[in-house]
Length: 81
Image (cartoon, rainbow, N blue to C red; front, side, top):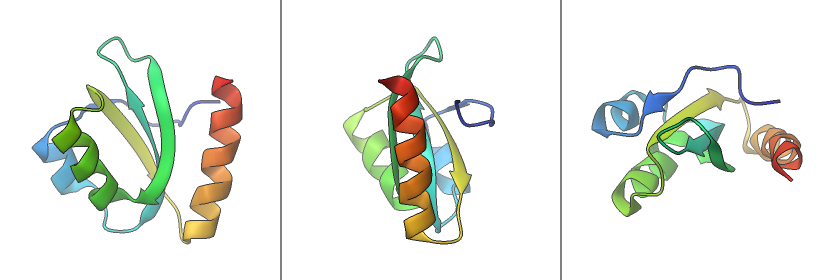
């Protein structure tokens, strides 16, 4: 099941609005197809994704702990396989 959040363009505004907290994020192409699922400190990871041009779009959900972010990311990755 994909994250139940709307896609946002992966740009400076999206990175600036991302919380500086752990979470799970999906990177997608221009058509909204999920390319990857990962977890970490959202703002830091999205800065890296933007710098490397890893995707066109992004959506995320915040978690309370890094451990919960890892668990949720694993659940979402299973869906892509």
